[in-house]
Amino acid sequence: MPRNARAQAFARVPTTDRKESYSPGADKIARRSIRRAHNEEIPEVAHAFEPKNLFLKALSAAELARLRPHLVFHRLPQGLVLHEAGQKVEHVHFIDSGMISLVATMQDGAQIETATLGRESMMGSLTALGEHRAGTRAIVQIDATSWRMSATDFRIAVAESPGLRQMALMSNELTLAQMQQTAACNALHTADRRLCRWIVQVRDRIDDDVIRLTHDFLAQMLAVRRPTVSLIAYGLQQAGLIRYQRGKITILDRAGLERGACECVGALREKTQKIIDDIR
Image (cartoon, rainbow, N blue to C red; front, top):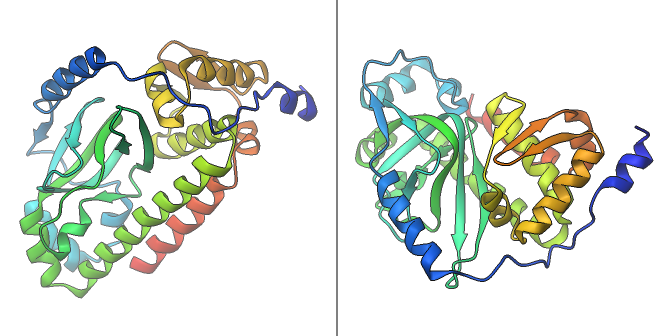
């Protein structure tokens, strides 16, 4: 398909679109699901130590040795809430695979993603400075794994190692950069370009062309109505970039998605690489 035909197939939707009204009944069901999900994290004490997390891989052997006795491999199923806003952060996660979203929630129940975390991230690094309460909800959006340790053990290890202090600082800098870039993206870029950006970012993290997501989740993350998600996805499908089915997006043309995405993809990749390089 010619490039101009693909461009016309995009559904240009303004970012001011809003999601459907909040439902107390639906929220009650969601809270029950969250309580169930809290009990589903699965530790694997004997798992081989072959970390894919970029922060762990960037550490020296001596620094890694400080952390290794405290790290336990965990499986994090989709839907698991790792912490809510205002909750004390008890653990540090070095994300090994999958994807975790940091989500801001309004009083009426509306939600929007403020950062996307994958194997290039660690979550909970602010605990290096002392006890810390989360500013957002952290939820597993795509089945994930992580190397987890207690915030207390992490704080002690960081106090003993300048290298680990540098790592914690760089992790906080990267998360802040993500939040700043995402805030600008949500305010300035159209929903179709944001969806392209989001799909490409997920693909970078999971190394799979099939992304399993619910319709409601996509609407929440883009802060648009569910019918708008269908409209945008239909445009991308007509352009030959994806195949969209209920609960699943299959990437057909990654290069085309890159062209359709906003500048934020490249900006975040560049920032991530610079920070990882600074740790080494």
